[in-house]
Every structure is written in C-alpha cells, then in structure tokens.
Amino acid sequence: MARTRWDTEHLPNLEGRRYLVTGSTRGLGYFSTEQLVRAGAHVIMTGRHPNRLAAAHAAVERRVGDAGLGTVETLLLDTSNFGSIRAAAATARTRGPLHGLLLNAGIVHPPRQRRTAGGHELVFTTNVLGHFALAGELLQNLAVVNGRMVWLGSMSTSLGAREPADPELAEGYTPWRAYVQSKVATTVLGLEADRRLRAAGVPASSVVAHPGYAISGRTAGVRGVNEPTRLTRFVDNLQAPFSQSKERGAHSLVRALVDPAISGGEFVGPRYVLHGGPRPGRPAQLTRGLELGTRLWEYCEDATRIRWPFEKAARARRRLR
Image (cartoon, rainbow, N blue to C red; front, side, top):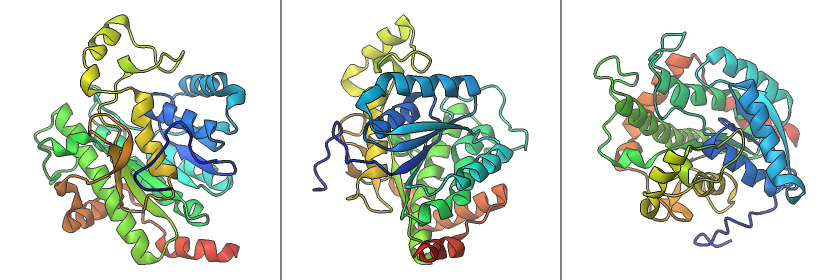
C-alpha cells in the first residue's frame, strides 16, 4: 500500500491479530477499539471503572454486531496505579502475543487531587509513567510477533511547549502545563523507545500518533460512552471548521497501529494538524532531542522501578522458531 494512500473506512483484514487498548471506555480509545474490531481484530479493552468498561464492551457489540469480524474482552487497568498495572500485565501476558499496544488512556483536565497514592503527580503518572511501565511489562508479548506500540501525542507539543526539566512539576504547577508536559514526554519516550528497540535488536516497534483537535460534541452519541449535553453539542459545533469527531481522531491512532507501511519511530497525525485524514508527519523539534530522550527514559525507570527487558525480548521470537 502506497504511503500516501490510506482508506480509513476499509482497513486491512486484521483477523487473527490481537491488540490491547488502554482507556477504552471513552473517546479515542473506544472508537479505536470499534474500528479494530470491525476489521477483524481481537481487542482487549481496558479501563479503571468496571461499570464503564462493561458499558463500553456492550456498546461495541451493539454497534459493530455482525458487521465486525473481530471480538472483544475486557481487563481492569488503571494507569495511575502501578499495582493495577502489574496485575493487568500479568493477566495479559497469559493471554498470548500482542500485535499492538495502544497507549491511549490519559487525563486532559486534571482533578483537584494532584498526587497519586504513591506520591507522584497524577497527570504525569496516568499519561506517562503508567504507560512506560505497561509497555515494559508487555514487551515480550509484542516481540514474539513483531508487534507495535503506539504512544498518544498531542498537537499541543507544538504550541510553545517547554522542555520538561521538572517532569512532575514540583514547582510552577498549572493544569494546562501538566497536560502539555505529559504529552511532550509521551512523544519523547515513544521516539526513544524505538531507538532502544532497534539498538537492542528487539523485533518490535514504537510509533507516536496524535488525533488533532477531536471533540465529543462533534462525535456520534453512544449510550454509556459518549453522551454530550446539548450545550456541549452547540459549543463544539461552532468549532466545526477547525475540529473533528473522536471517530476521525481515532483514525490516526489506528493507522499508526496497523498500517504496515508505517515504520518505527514515525509520527502520525491528521493531514491538516487539527483535522483531516491520517498521514505521517514530523513531531515538534523539542521532542526529537536525544539527550532529552535519555534523561526522561532514566527518570521513568527510576520512578516506576521498571527496566524494560530488552535482552529477553530480543530472544523471545527466536525461542518460538
């Protein structure tokens, strides 16, 4: 398939392929799941609230129905809780290889509580540390089938973002700064992960994707998943010229996850940045620095106490031959 062509309505046949999606109960994670299942994939939907996870699972089955060839299962996972991550990863490891890991879950609007029970800043933990830990825990499951991990970036990294010298914002905290800094970090780590996977000879890849300006008021109503108020619909539709729905925002994530023409280390987003069909692009210059990549990687290793098993993952595929 040519790199400049991608049909978002007719994905490659994904029968026999398995994906895990974090944050599947809402927004981009939910609609990415729908699109994968319609194409024949088996998707492990994850979320931290059992009732929301059950509602999202039911919505996929109701909306996709016989039109989809794939299947779904659910798994409780809270990316702000390292104990939850370890437990979920242990379960996922027993369920077989993963062709893709979509690291989507995250906080956009921080709640009043700034810290997790472990003392880390909540946004950075949920958006960054939790996914760093999960990807490390599931690396061997990806490596045995040349799998791919996709980190969720943001167009906000090009809007005057600064280098995260203080990753968890011990000083100078604001909700917006916490969010943007977390997205700088996920993009940096996604690119750094691919460099390290290549260097270690691990048969897995890492890609970064962003959804543009995707908002719920321009998104289809889905019972138990997306139920915007009339006011939200009205306000969001005023932004129609420079926004898009969550369904369309998910197109970039899904292409990054399944398009065989996308290589590790790439950055995928909407054609017109805020909206449009998905295509490879170029991440913000700030996120491409090698020194920053090394520094953030080491910070995440210390904070999570997880070292990715590169050597074991490099051997994983050979053991199956």
